[in-house]
Image 1: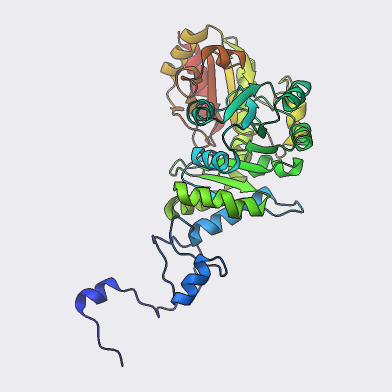
Image 2 (image 1 turned 90 degrees about the vertical axis):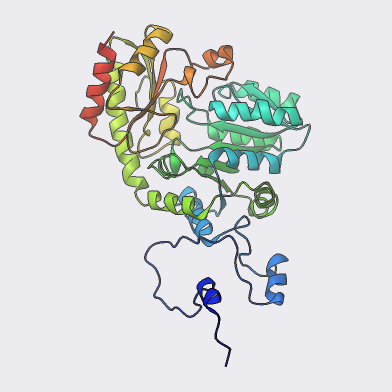
Length: 401
């Protein structure tokens, strides 16, 4: 019989024989490390001969469960498997992918109308270390192939479709075929669509990135990111190792919040899409609006392509160009009352942003304007509120001078 523990020791030690039936909800494993039963088991786990958790930065059961769910959603209905990892943010997911897949002297081929933070990452962090971004119009397939022929050091083709904030689309199927012909990997940011609206693996993409902060979580209470890859060896090898050593991993609490949001993803995306379609049609008829970027409008130049690549609707994101440029844009932002001015998207409430003075402030103005991100452009993440309340606020904001 073991000697009884002291009071302080009893306070510290957890009960090992507390039996329970399985939990209905995913538990939060709020632990930085995991106990190993023996030195033999420890050696087996650390050497990779046996599965197990050892330290929170390396992995956690809560994270693993949510990562598996996201991978399952991106491959739902497809005859393929994928691996996923969760990160501390969407930007850390992108950074980890690039650090793991690219070396000094290699290049990224991408588009000029990316999210501003991604553009800054390429130019201000990666480029000084010798990884060069090449910006081009990815809709020009002949131009893309010419660059792939001219630049054999291009190792990754990275894009958004739809793009943030112009909603411009690129042809995934054609780009993947070109990339494969030149031994180049492909990656897409699928944050705007989520797998409910678009599954890039259908078109052969190698990697899918999400800022789970946005639609996958949907409630604005967690910052995290996800990377889903078809190459299990790369995901379990260099990408996991880079995450582990760079410390870009997610934590159990944020992973649990993502999982909670995922439960209503399909319902939310349906309502986001319905409301956004109504808002886009309203703005399209307004005299103070010069142009509306929404893929659900037949006159959008990428409507036909989006119809082929997307399903279940066209999402909750749109942008529109006000007549009057910067002054009109600033005045509109001052006038909104019901909608929220916030530098994020994908929440259940409607969020409005002026890209030229916020998300794309540090993107060169010539590059910004060449890609349709003008001083009068307003971005809206249409929420799931009563759509009449959204319309009334927009009408009031547009009417005030």
